[in-house]
Image (cartoon, rainbow, N blue to C red; front, top):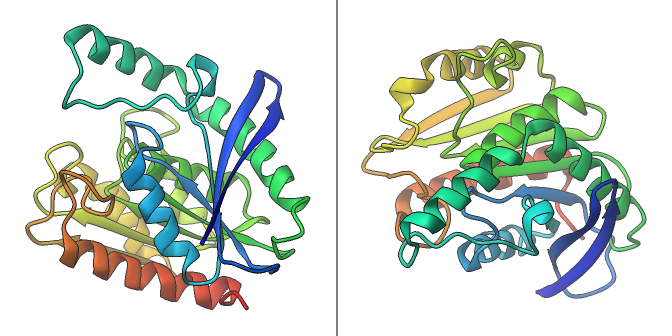
Length: 245
């Protein structure tokens, strides 16, 4: 695998982009990875490499670049003040700002000769799952397939809750929950789950014994749930985008 870091211009200043891709010249189809709430940590990079190994250019942009370069929150060492600051940064990264950044990332990928032309896929973890739903709804011409793993804030009381847009999606969508997820449980996401299962190309799996974070190497990681979800993700990406060559 080749790892690269780039800087992309946005209306709000420079934004970091981390890319993992196979060795060689390509081109390969692109998959955008929306990192989980704590930021693009080492576990997130491992998850990106797993997907790149299938024959994809996998790119993740710095969700919190307006508040510092590649900010990562580590709850193992965080103080109460650190936790408060993280919550502020987390809330400040609104859907609207994430979409502005996504458009800058897509333009960057379009100009990369290692990236195949045509539609892309996306995968998101935790709050990144919400970003997947927004991307599929707002950019159906670019994103043909999405995967949301242990997603958060997808079923809310907001009038524009992400789950409300699911019935109109045209992309393939796979969602994986942990049965023991205490952050965003399957029971808290019944409307979202029902909407995905009603899609002709929608699928939801609830993994027994899995916690929030089961698909990102780290404290909540669970081999069985992760392996199954990545198996389904790979099948959907290959079907929609074609495997890398």
